[in-house]
Image 1 (cartoon, rainbow, N blue to C red):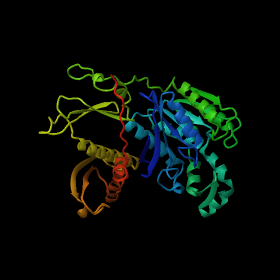
Image 2: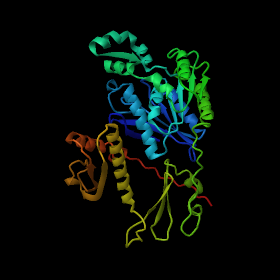
Image 3: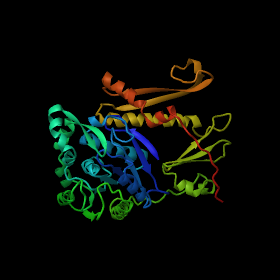
Image 4: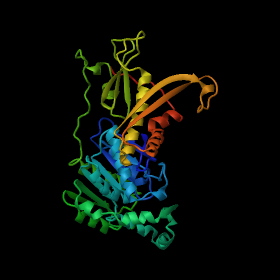
Length: 423
């Protein structure tokens, strides 16, 4: 499932959420290596393999990399940490907070640094990670003099050209990584290849010796740094799943079919497997009665009622378009709150009022159509707090970056199929 959420500087980050069938035993976050992406061999293969063990995995592109917005040259290790925290907040708000943080190479250093800011963390896994984030300066040591004197330099990394600025080096040098390791309040699994030519195995030893128990080490014997061999990624996933079950599995049973006020089990009306898998990966809607158009909606483990107003029906729930507006409004409010909190703005509260109408396309300033009628949504935001004019303006801008807003304004494809009923 492709998703987006605002990162450390407000740029939208591209992500993918891999979900197992049924209710996940745990949620995990995967942070990729330096200048890599969420679709690297290690990230994609390990994430997909963990799904087979019942673990849901969110993997995302750091700011300025892969499909994410932003300028990579303006990022640093601190912004990477903030991006990790933003990703965990997205999971906690929309699904369940992650109990497992997994990081490959510099991504491992980032999750170690972010763990203390993610209260749900019970287990941290590093794969080929440096003990000190300053290790990455070895990748462009030949340009260090130019960076120091000119403030920046273009370097080749992984076959691509990147602009590296002095602020990145300064930021990395100031990281208290050893102290973070000593204070890590989570179980730690260190995974490293003894023949890693990019990040030597001594880094694994330093991480392991600095951290306190509980901690474990697994050798990825014969693997290269990028875990480009599919079997190495599968082995790593199996070890992560087996080890993390002791520390990080939620132990939550799959949602059971709910009962109506009359005591009738809704499984008689709704496909039972559909109710169990209504965990955020899908929304199930079924006729429920007694009103003619009343609908029962299962979404992310919650049950809602939709209906048409009188005189068409009994008005037992919100109308279908109310849900569309509610989705846009809640996404807008959540996006603004996440951004304001990261920017430490004194935003006490935010509310969103939405209305819908059909207007003549010829009168619409922003529409591409010039004939017929078009849907027009009006969104009014109310901010409470001692905000400056500049802060209020930035919140209005970030509102337009809410994922639902972008979906509604972008091209949408809908596929309709028939699913066999269960008797």
